[in-house]
Amino acid sequence: METSLTITWVPHALPPIVCQSTHLRKLELHTSTITELPEAFGQLTNLRTLIINRTWLQELPRSFERLINLRELDLSANNFRVIPNEICHLTNLRKLNLSTSSIHQIPKHIKNLKNLRDLDLSISRIEAISGAVFKLKNLRKLSLGANSITHVSQNISKLKNLRILHLGGNCIKKLP
Image (cartoon, rainbow, N blue to C red; front, side, top):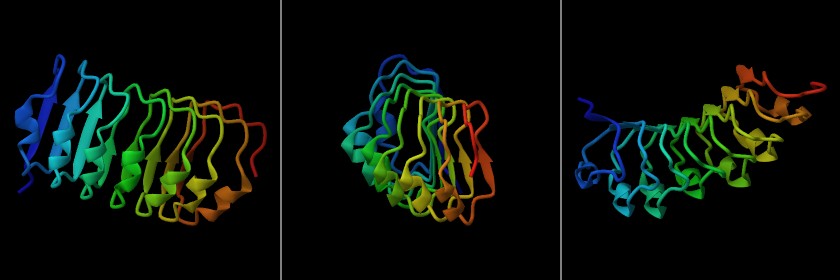
């Protein structure tokens, strides 16, 4: 049986009871003015699915990297400017959504997400597809629409499992 919790609208801080609910497998937090997660958030090690969207989050606590059982992470519509390093320790992650953000580049450490199948960074400020993306051999879906990408490297062909590639809304002049 999957234990889940959905919270809509938390005014300023996550209630402490949430971080004490270590049995949770799915947590959804929508539309909130929270700007940070407590360090105790890392106690939720049984989480498989985490959706925190439409908040004011800009960074994650260091303890976030302890959520090693996460398979799906949706942090869309937050205030991230960079992809937090803590995410790249989540090696079991299969789906990552950081769309609708101010992220402007894809860091090298994203290559650590070896099991990633679905990456959504659409509606952000990305100007180039990092070479690290081409090391995500299990990637099946890559969504980079509505960014500022002008070039797609021939290395895109290294993604042998890629089935869906969204690049609409960019200013790409030529495809390989």
